[in-house]
Amino acid sequence: MAASVRDNKDRSRFELYIGSEIAFANYRLTPSAVIITHTETPRALRGRGIASELVKGALELIRRDGRKLIAGCGFVVDYLDKHPEDADLVA
Image (tube, rainbow, N blue to C red; front, side, top):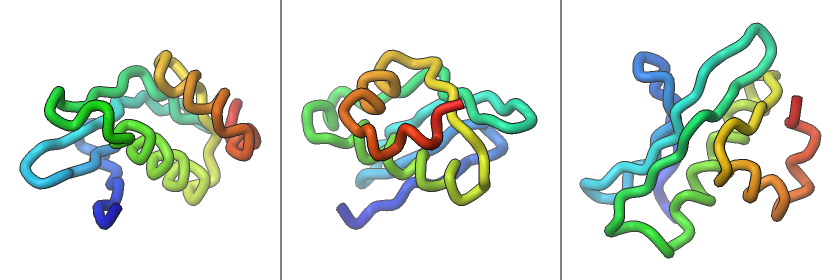
């Protein structure tokens, strides 16, 4: 996928633009961790792995910033179950 995830700090969410559509993951910050509270993918993009790409990109940004992750969203919990290589990020 050519698109990349960005951290929209003003809206406290990670965003992934696909054409004119946007998938996003809302978050809250603690001093050492990022709590992803909700992920949303537009209906037109569902079933294409977009949410997984979003979470993967968000985890890369969290890792780069030296923070940990708290999964406060069922999709992120499921993603982490399927990707044990990211277990080091879990707070």
